[in-house]
Length: 186
Image 1 (tube, rainbow, N blue to C red):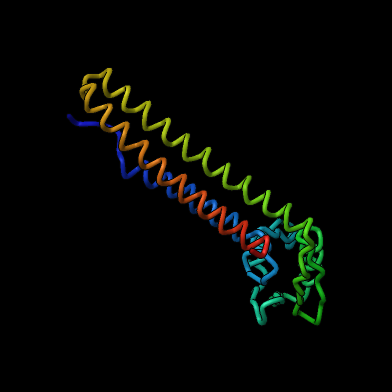
Image 2: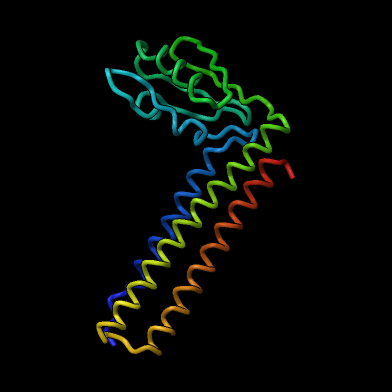
């Protein structure tokens, strides 16, 4: 009755999909300032691409404003250019080594696009969870073929894997629904 399928490993991998979804959703703009908005911005400095948070300090001084304190004065132009070209709809205002990013109001059309994007992120996470479930089910079938577990034991464990999958997908749906409501202002 020694199974090689590790339930805690499946849980860890499914939790990884949820964590990735949370990170993706944090980067979606909701009209409120968040440092996560600029996490994906890559700045071309010192001959290579670096994340913004490795060349500057990003902070939220007020609800509709981000500030980027660039550490090296020679990188201010590169940071400003990277933010403009990141497709975030932000218009940087440079003041010495400080770059201000006022957060504009979202249009209804843009809100719908962002809500749709949140749904796409959730679907990507669900696919990752289903792939983990498939790996677990395949492992159980292999264990049964090797006579490591009985058919009854395999079926019982498959029910456990399916329950874990259903719970994780419900968590993903809840996260996506709450983000969509936040984006749409409901």
